[in-house]
Image (cartoon, rainbow, N blue to C red):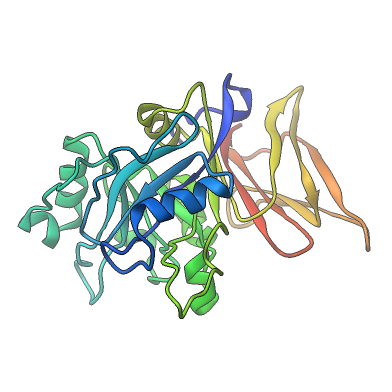
Length: 299
């Protein structure tokens, strides 16, 4: 596996982000400044605007406590079937031109984004019924959504943990990202807003640090629970978190250890002896069924 850092052992502080939001410049219901203000009021530190095939003028939207990142959602086609990739792309210049070749080929799209210093995240692979053959060999794709609130509301397919885990089983390690895919369209109401996010561990709130955190795994994804610590120390795998109904440590398909809270109670930690696995990742589930996903640690 790549040498992901362990964010729980890094200096700095945790920042809450949203990397998948649409505005009225594509198919969202609010203008960019309104989207930013809504997320700012709900405690988000980082907001990426990712309108379909379109960037925004974000001048003046950031402040001392909130970082706004320009991006877009790109849609190159699948090579072997009907449909399109959905890529949440971060850190693009305003009026960034997607080339004709990039519109027709996913690797060309990822390469073009990387050349200008951007970063691409695979969006809601479960909703798109993707398997590892369609993204496992792609370059310049460091992250994947493991939770997408809009996908859950539209078809109960919000969790892409299965696709994320399948990638790891094939030696492809992508940073876990939680997202909303927010539109605020009348048919959706507010159910997809503020419902999924990544926490990023960084020294300061800058675009460069955001991109580095995603590339190095200095983050975790959540749709509710908070993970306070996750590490390997003193011969143990250790995790502490907010109130949980159960906690899983996982690696391959048959490699799982679980601690379940007694009936009517919750748990806040789980420790096991280091297992004979190549890596360990963690999933925390609360009493409402909401989850948080920690990136893998090498064992």
